[in-house]
Length: 404
Image (cartoon, one colour):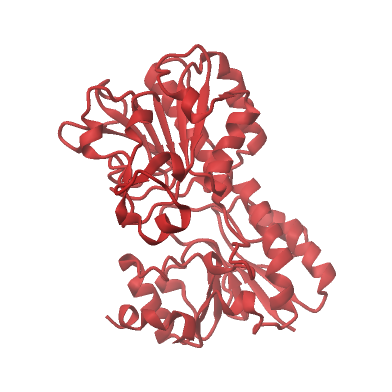
């Protein structure tokens, strides 16, 4: 018999998502009647304690009796229980400085830790991710910014019970007033989520070439820029996907031509530190720049989009970037500024929908392994950073990071 705990989220700012909905726990109990599930009390979760209790799921103050505990964001250091198995998004494997104390504490407490981010199949495709939803909410928030800045409309701020249907319905209502042009960068899950919104609300897609030169429009236009549209090799002006991944430093940005045509940039691309900067401080000062709003969904601080000075929050999703002083100012305070949306936890705005989606993927790929005791399955071992407080072989490179 194995006991599964659903953690209360303890990260600040607040995250309302959860790894399993009440219905998903009931479904797992039907498949695995010997398994026990417990839900830690929470007053912030998208699904209330009462909703779990009504389905006969124990809601408890502590999960001390549980074997494996599932959260979403990192557990607070003071909430960690010794010798337990935790599963959440750890933001540790890339040696993020701010989470060094977390891994040190988990090692000290003899914890086993599995990171959702590295749950992949044999083809290295992620099994449990929120990227598509980040693109959906990022597109909505960015159009919110456009409505406020242009003084044409105000889209409703997402609440804890916001849904995808509500989001799309809200945009459709103001579509006649969305006469602007949008560049979406990237073609992964984040970008696909943003594209889905544009498609569902009836926006017009143009090819990158057809998009160029269009600074004014009577409708909502957008184009999608893949990496091949964004960079070229300095030596010969060419692009090769595999070479770019290995030698990003040998490429330069050609994004400026689109920056002179689009009013809105919706940044949804993957970016590495050795790759070119697309929206540089110099380009942000260029008088030809048409971009007035940046929705940086991927939120690489001062990365490829240099107007992104910090991450913003759901409560205060917008701020202005002054290109002359390279500094932050109050949102929508000056028409010469660039308005920035840089919420780095976008999926939390659709906590009900995203929790259900995430629980479905966990129920398909992860819980059968856990509940059948298959902890040595490659899907789990590839994502397990710590085993009983010791770094696993795959993550041994973290030794110095975890000891400092």
